[in-house]
Amino acid sequence: MAIDERAWWLLAALALDALAGDPEWLWRRIAHPVVLAGRVVSALDRRLNRDEDPPARRRRQGRLALALLLGLSLAAGGGLCFLARTLHGGALLEIAAVALLLAQRSLYEHVAAVGEALRADRLGAARRAVSRIVGREPGHLDAPAVGRAAIESLAENFSDAVVAPALWYLVAGLPGILAYKALNTADSMIGQRSARHLDFGRAAARADDLANLPASRLSALLLIGAAAVVDGRASGGRALGSVRRDAARHRSPNAGWPEAAMAGALDRALAGPRRYAEGDVDDAWMHPGGSRNADGADVGRALRLYVAACAGLAGVVALLALGLA
Image (tube, rainbow, N blue to C red; front, side, top):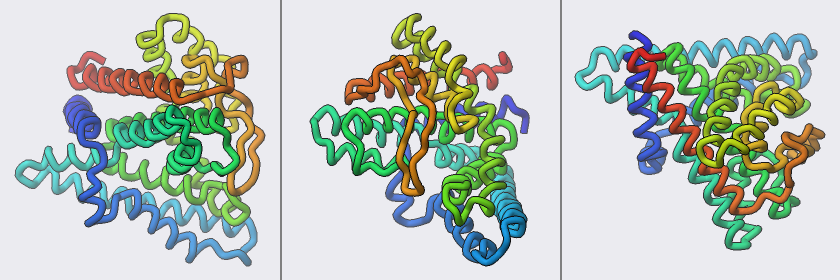
């Protein structure tokens, strides 16, 4: 399939996801592809990651696990491609499959729940809502820290859960987007976040960093453009300056780009030291000169930037579909 034709399907999938989001009735009946990938990762972890093995062997086993996971994902994507090309109405099947692997609406809804709780001064509810989208320990977070966590997650997941899947679909179709989602799931589960996975998860973490590199840069550009449109040239300029100054200082080679753009756009300091179940992380602040007091209104501003950035992504895809980019 030519990239312009694939871009049309992606444009339709982005629209479908924005309108419908995740169909809960469907996932009550069957497992989401990400859930299935998680089950495969867990099974490989149990069988191949043995505590008694030396570090070198655990690294080799981690590479084997990643190869098996990606092989299964590519095969599943190839099967879906075959069905989409042979069945009557197969294009609709492909569009629906891609939409299910994007997370525009669900990400918006999860972050909006945090903002609503903060605006209602319900810190407990805000902590519960933010715990669904971040890996850090929410119990010790005060209201500004909850707001910052929600905004950081919105920025990072705009890249990981929206832009990156879209790019990998454009590059490699259904096999590409399924393999990316499986890889991203593996990184979240075993990507060097504990002593058990320091060696076994190294391959998954490094591959995920590489796979997300182009999307993180594009996400930052889209957020900078959104800031210029939504909040004026000053915030767009701040977003660009924050990216140029701070993105590379983040402990992640990718997350700093959209987080720095969002931080500069909102004039809020994001990232910084954080506490996870695996221990504390002493990370650099993105836009350190900004305020650290992020409230429900700031979460709402971040969501408006996010919607504009999603519209910008759709615009880029539309240009590709028309052969103008």
